[in-house]
Length: 145
Image (cartoon, rainbow, N blue to C red):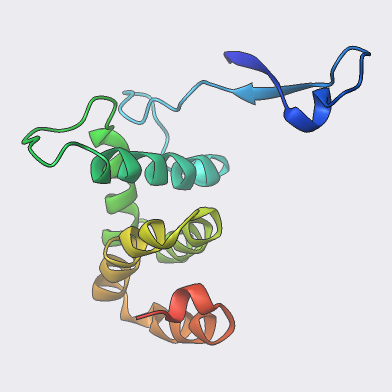
């Protein structure tokens, strides 16, 4: 796995001693690989984080752009949609929605989440509705209009 060394401000500060090094993974999952195993739940958090990054690329593209922005991963979008729209694993899809909400960094992220994965999940798996309502009662990010 490719790694990058990143010096954090709090690690360096005004301390003249060598800074603490924080490792950050740069390697993205190849969601289009022939050997990609959709059953691997260990990648779900990564799927959520990369989906949000993907959506930010889309929303920040130039308004005059008619194509897909550079770096936008159609395979990633496809896997996320297949998980929430298909019958692969509705419980896992619900956990993915909650992970997306957890990693949302602003109102626009929450808006993109709201018009995508949960809408599709509820349309295709009505049995999840009670869980969405219960979560909305305790998490204000889920109950905003």
